[in-house]
Length: 275
Ligand code: ADP
Image 1 (tube, rainbow, N blue to C red):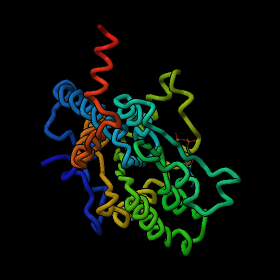
Image 2: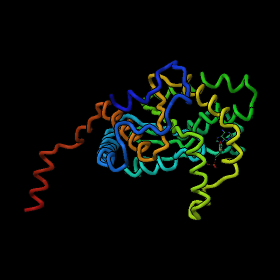
Image 3: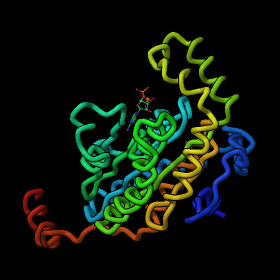
Image 4: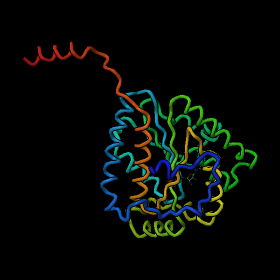
Protein backbone atom coordinates (compact mmCIF):
# COMPACT_ATOMS: atom_id res chain seq x y z
CA UNK A 1 0.00 0.00 0.00
CA UNK A 2 1.31 3.46 -0.86
CA UNK A 3 1.73 6.27 1.65
CA UNK A 4 -1.08 8.08 -0.17
CA UNK A 5 -3.47 5.32 0.89
CA UNK A 6 -1.91 4.68 4.29
CA UNK A 7 -1.68 8.26 5.51
CA UNK A 8 -4.68 9.91 3.82
CA UNK A 9 -7.63 10.86 6.02
CA UNK A 10 -10.86 9.69 4.46
CA UNK A 11 -13.66 12.26 4.14
CA UNK A 12 -15.80 12.37 7.27
CA UNK A 13 -13.32 10.29 9.32
CA UNK A 14 -13.23 10.73 13.07
CA UNK A 15 -9.61 11.70 13.71
CA UNK A 16 -7.94 10.64 16.97
CA UNK A 17 -4.37 11.93 16.93
CA UNK A 18 -3.52 10.19 20.21
CA UNK A 19 -3.96 6.85 18.46
CA UNK A 20 -1.50 7.71 15.70
CA UNK A 21 2.14 6.83 16.37
CA UNK A 22 4.22 9.94 15.60
CA UNK A 23 7.37 7.77 15.56
CA UNK A 24 6.15 5.42 12.80
CA UNK A 25 8.83 4.68 10.21
CA UNK A 26 6.95 2.65 7.63
CA UNK A 27 8.96 -0.32 6.43
CA UNK A 28 12.31 1.29 7.18
CA UNK A 29 14.35 0.85 10.32
CA UNK A 30 16.74 3.74 9.75
CA UNK A 31 17.52 6.76 7.66
CA UNK A 32 20.34 4.85 5.95
CA UNK A 33 17.91 2.15 4.90
CA UNK A 34 15.45 4.73 3.53
CA UNK A 35 18.07 6.91 1.82
CA UNK A 36 17.84 5.37 -1.69
CA UNK A 37 14.04 5.70 -1.63
CA UNK A 38 14.29 9.32 -0.49
CA UNK A 39 16.70 10.04 -3.33
CA UNK A 40 14.41 8.39 -5.88
CA UNK A 41 11.35 10.31 -4.60
CA UNK A 42 13.31 13.56 -4.85
CA UNK A 43 14.36 12.76 -8.42
CA UNK A 44 10.77 12.00 -9.42
CA UNK A 45 9.51 15.16 -7.80
CA UNK A 46 11.99 17.21 -9.83
CA UNK A 47 10.88 15.58 -13.09
CA UNK A 48 7.18 16.00 -12.34
CA UNK A 49 7.46 19.62 -11.31
CA UNK A 50 9.25 20.30 -14.60
CA UNK A 51 6.34 18.64 -16.39
CA UNK A 52 3.74 20.65 -14.44
CA UNK A 53 5.61 23.84 -15.33
CA UNK A 54 5.95 22.90 -19.00
CA UNK A 55 2.33 21.77 -19.31
CA UNK A 56 1.13 25.03 -17.73
CA UNK A 57 -2.43 23.74 -17.37
CA UNK A 58 -2.84 23.15 -13.67
CA UNK A 59 -1.36 24.14 -10.34
CA UNK A 60 -0.46 22.42 -7.10
CA UNK A 61 -1.04 23.80 -3.62
CA UNK A 62 0.77 22.13 -0.73
CA UNK A 63 -0.49 23.09 2.72
CA UNK A 64 1.73 22.45 5.74
CA UNK A 65 0.42 22.59 9.27
CA UNK A 66 1.78 21.32 12.52
CA UNK A 67 2.64 22.37 16.02
CA UNK A 68 5.68 24.46 16.81
CA UNK A 69 8.88 22.57 15.91
CA UNK A 70 6.92 19.93 13.97
CA UNK A 71 9.21 20.53 10.98
CA UNK A 72 7.34 22.78 8.57
CA UNK A 73 10.52 24.65 7.62
CA UNK A 74 12.52 21.43 7.25
CA UNK A 75 9.87 19.88 5.02
CA UNK A 76 9.82 22.95 2.79
CA UNK A 77 13.58 22.83 2.54
CA UNK A 78 13.48 19.20 1.50
CA UNK A 79 10.58 19.37 -0.95
CA UNK A 80 11.71 22.64 -2.45
CA UNK A 81 15.25 21.37 -2.78
CA UNK A 82 13.88 19.06 -5.46
CA UNK A 83 12.18 21.81 -7.41
CA UNK A 84 13.09 24.56 -9.87
CA UNK A 85 12.59 27.83 -7.96
CA UNK A 86 11.07 29.44 -11.08
CA UNK A 87 8.03 27.22 -10.68
CA UNK A 88 7.51 27.57 -6.92
CA UNK A 89 6.35 30.02 -4.32
CA UNK A 90 6.44 29.66 -0.56
CA UNK A 91 4.24 31.82 1.63
CA UNK A 92 4.35 31.85 5.41
CA UNK A 93 1.32 33.11 7.30
CA UNK A 94 1.81 34.85 10.60
CA UNK A 95 -0.50 36.97 12.75
CA UNK A 96 -2.55 38.91 10.16
CA UNK A 97 -1.40 42.46 9.39
CA UNK A 98 -3.79 45.37 9.85
CA UNK A 99 -4.67 45.24 6.16
CA UNK A 100 -5.19 41.46 6.19
CA UNK A 101 -7.31 41.62 9.33
CA UNK A 102 -9.52 44.24 7.68
CA UNK A 103 -10.50 41.74 4.96
CA UNK A 104 -12.43 38.48 4.96
CA UNK A 105 -10.36 35.68 6.49
CA UNK A 106 -9.61 33.93 3.19
CA UNK A 107 -8.38 37.03 1.37
CA UNK A 108 -4.68 36.70 2.12
CA UNK A 109 -4.65 32.97 1.30
CA UNK A 110 -6.44 33.34 -2.00
CA UNK A 111 -3.91 35.96 -3.11
CA UNK A 112 -1.11 33.44 -2.54
CA UNK A 113 -2.80 30.55 -4.41
CA UNK A 114 -0.68 29.18 -7.26
CA UNK A 115 -0.97 30.25 -10.90
CA UNK A 116 -1.14 27.57 -13.60
CA UNK A 117 2.14 25.69 -13.96
CA UNK A 118 3.17 26.66 -10.43
CA UNK A 119 3.57 24.91 -7.10
CA UNK A 120 2.67 26.99 -4.05
CA UNK A 121 3.61 25.90 -0.55
CA UNK A 122 1.74 27.38 2.40
CA UNK A 123 3.73 27.42 5.63
CA UNK A 124 0.68 27.66 7.91
CA UNK A 125 -2.49 28.46 6.04
CA UNK A 126 -6.21 29.26 6.14
CA UNK A 127 -6.43 26.49 8.75
CA UNK A 128 -4.90 28.85 11.34
CA UNK A 129 -8.32 30.50 11.33
CA UNK A 130 -9.82 27.36 12.89
CA UNK A 131 -6.71 26.51 14.97
CA UNK A 132 -5.01 29.36 16.86
CA UNK A 133 -8.14 31.47 16.35
CA UNK A 134 -10.33 28.77 17.90
CA UNK A 135 -7.96 27.81 20.73
CA UNK A 136 -7.56 31.43 21.84
CA UNK A 137 -11.11 32.49 20.98
CA UNK A 138 -9.83 35.33 18.79
CA UNK A 139 -13.30 35.41 17.26
CA UNK A 140 -16.52 33.99 18.78
CA UNK A 141 -17.39 30.32 18.24
CA UNK A 142 -20.32 31.25 16.00
CA UNK A 143 -17.80 32.83 13.63
CA UNK A 144 -15.03 30.20 13.55
CA UNK A 145 -17.43 27.26 13.55
CA UNK A 146 -18.78 28.32 10.13
CA UNK A 147 -15.30 28.44 8.67
CA UNK A 148 -15.00 24.70 8.01
CA UNK A 149 -17.73 25.05 5.38
CA UNK A 150 -16.13 28.22 4.01
CA UNK A 151 -12.78 26.45 3.75
CA UNK A 152 -14.30 23.45 1.98
CA UNK A 153 -16.09 25.75 -0.47
CA UNK A 154 -12.88 27.75 -1.08
CA UNK A 155 -10.87 24.60 -1.75
CA UNK A 156 -13.61 23.17 -4.00
CA UNK A 157 -13.54 26.37 -6.04
CA UNK A 158 -9.74 26.14 -6.41
CA UNK A 159 -9.97 22.46 -7.34
CA UNK A 160 -12.65 23.20 -9.95
CA UNK A 161 -10.21 25.68 -11.42
CA UNK A 162 -7.46 23.04 -11.79
CA UNK A 163 -5.61 23.75 -8.55
CA UNK A 164 -4.72 20.41 -6.98
CA UNK A 165 -4.50 20.56 -3.19
CA UNK A 166 -2.54 18.32 -0.81
CA UNK A 167 -2.58 19.09 2.90
CA UNK A 168 -0.09 17.73 5.41
CA UNK A 169 -0.35 17.66 9.18
CA UNK A 170 3.13 17.03 10.58
CA UNK A 171 2.45 14.90 13.63
CA UNK A 172 4.91 14.97 16.53
CA UNK A 173 4.32 13.90 20.12
CA UNK A 174 4.87 16.09 23.21
CA UNK A 175 8.23 14.46 24.09
CA UNK A 176 9.58 15.06 20.60
CA UNK A 177 8.53 18.70 20.74
CA UNK A 178 10.40 19.15 24.03
CA UNK A 179 13.48 17.46 22.56
CA UNK A 180 13.41 19.89 19.65
CA UNK A 181 12.95 22.90 21.94
CA UNK A 182 16.03 21.72 23.87
CA UNK A 183 18.04 21.22 20.68
CA UNK A 184 17.25 24.80 19.68
CA UNK A 185 18.40 26.13 23.05
CA UNK A 186 21.64 24.17 22.77
CA UNK A 187 22.45 25.34 19.24
CA UNK A 188 23.32 29.04 18.94
CA UNK A 189 22.70 28.93 15.17
CA UNK A 190 19.07 28.11 15.90
CA UNK A 191 18.40 30.60 18.70
CA UNK A 192 16.74 32.87 16.16
CA UNK A 193 14.06 30.21 15.65
CA UNK A 194 12.93 30.28 19.27
CA UNK A 195 9.82 32.31 19.91
CA UNK A 196 7.96 33.06 23.11
CA UNK A 197 4.80 31.76 21.47
CA UNK A 198 6.30 28.22 21.24
CA UNK A 199 6.34 28.12 25.03
CA UNK A 200 3.08 30.02 25.46
CA UNK A 201 1.23 27.51 23.25
CA UNK A 202 2.54 24.35 24.91
CA UNK A 203 -0.02 24.40 27.80
CA UNK A 204 -2.75 24.42 25.15
CA UNK A 205 -1.55 21.10 23.68
CA UNK A 206 -4.88 19.32 24.18
CA UNK A 207 -6.93 22.24 22.87
CA UNK A 208 -4.81 22.23 19.74
CA UNK A 209 -5.25 18.47 19.45
CA UNK A 210 -9.03 18.92 19.44
CA UNK A 211 -8.79 21.81 16.95
CA UNK A 212 -6.52 19.85 14.58
CA UNK A 213 -8.74 16.76 14.81
CA UNK A 214 -11.82 18.77 13.85
CA UNK A 215 -10.09 20.68 11.06
CA UNK A 216 -8.63 17.52 9.56
CA UNK A 217 -11.81 15.47 9.96
CA UNK A 218 -14.18 18.12 8.63
CA UNK A 219 -11.97 19.33 5.79
CA UNK A 220 -10.40 16.17 4.36
CA UNK A 221 -12.23 15.91 1.05
CA UNK A 222 -11.77 14.00 -2.18
CA UNK A 223 -10.51 17.12 -3.94
CA UNK A 224 -8.32 18.38 -1.07
CA UNK A 225 -7.26 15.50 1.19
CA UNK A 226 -5.41 15.78 4.49
CA UNK A 227 -2.50 13.47 5.22
CA UNK A 228 -1.28 12.85 8.75
CA UNK A 229 2.49 12.45 8.54
CA UNK A 230 4.27 10.76 11.45
CA UNK A 231 7.06 13.31 11.91
CA UNK A 232 9.14 12.38 14.96
CA UNK A 233 11.70 11.08 12.46
CA UNK A 234 12.58 13.89 10.10
CA UNK A 235 13.81 11.55 7.38
CA UNK A 236 10.54 9.61 7.41
CA UNK A 237 8.56 12.86 7.22
CA UNK A 238 10.60 13.95 4.20
CA UNK A 239 10.22 10.57 2.54
CA UNK A 240 6.47 10.40 3.11
CA UNK A 241 5.74 13.95 1.95
CA UNK A 242 7.88 13.72 -1.17
CA UNK A 243 6.49 10.31 -2.09
CA UNK A 244 2.89 11.45 -1.64
CA UNK A 245 3.45 14.60 -3.70
CA UNK A 246 5.31 12.78 -6.46
CA UNK A 247 2.91 9.82 -6.64
CA UNK A 248 -0.03 12.19 -6.70
CA UNK A 249 1.52 14.29 -9.48
CA UNK A 250 2.37 11.14 -11.39
CA UNK A 251 -1.29 10.07 -11.27
CA UNK A 252 -2.39 13.25 -13.08
CA UNK A 253 -1.20 11.96 -16.45
CA UNK A 254 0.48 15.24 -17.33
CA UNK A 255 1.95 15.60 -20.81
CA UNK A 256 4.48 17.93 -22.37
CA UNK A 257 2.64 20.38 -24.64
CA UNK A 258 3.05 19.85 -28.39
CA UNK A 259 5.71 22.08 -30.00
CA UNK A 260 4.51 25.48 -31.19
CA UNK A 261 6.83 25.26 -34.21
CA UNK A 262 7.44 22.75 -37.04
CA UNK A 263 10.32 20.74 -35.53
CA UNK A 264 11.38 19.29 -38.92
CA UNK A 265 11.62 22.77 -40.44
CA UNK A 266 13.61 23.94 -37.40
CA UNK A 267 15.90 20.91 -37.71
CA UNK A 268 16.66 21.86 -41.32
CA UNK A 269 17.38 25.47 -40.31
CA UNK A 270 19.70 24.18 -37.60
CA UNK A 271 21.64 21.99 -40.05
CA UNK A 272 21.91 24.88 -42.49
CA UNK A 273 23.45 26.98 -39.70
CA UNK A 274 25.71 24.24 -38.41
CA UNK A 275 27.15 23.21 -41.80
P1 ADP B 1 6.49 30.12 12.45
O1 ADP B 1 5.41 29.86 11.44
O2 ADP B 1 7.87 29.89 11.93
O3 ADP B 1 6.24 29.44 13.76
P2 ADP B 1 6.12 32.51 13.97
O4 ADP B 1 6.89 31.98 15.14
O5 ADP B 1 6.25 33.98 13.65
O6 ADP B 1 6.44 31.69 12.65
O7 ADP B 1 4.60 32.14 14.20
C1 ADP B 1 3.57 32.65 13.45
C2 ADP B 1 2.43 32.88 14.40
O8 ADP B 1 1.35 33.45 13.69
C3 ADP B 1 1.91 31.58 15.00
O9 ADP B 1 1.86 31.69 16.41
C4 ADP B 1 0.53 31.44 14.42
O10 ADP B 1 -0.37 30.80 15.26
C5 ADP B 1 0.17 32.89 14.16
N1 ADP B 1 -0.90 33.02 13.18
C6 ADP B 1 -0.90 32.55 11.92
N2 ADP B 1 -2.10 32.79 11.32
C7 ADP B 1 -2.85 33.43 12.23
C8 ADP B 1 -4.18 33.94 12.21
N3 ADP B 1 -4.96 33.83 11.15
N4 ADP B 1 -4.62 34.55 13.34
C9 ADP B 1 -3.84 34.66 14.42
N5 ADP B 1 -2.59 34.20 14.51
C10 ADP B 1 -2.09 33.58 13.42
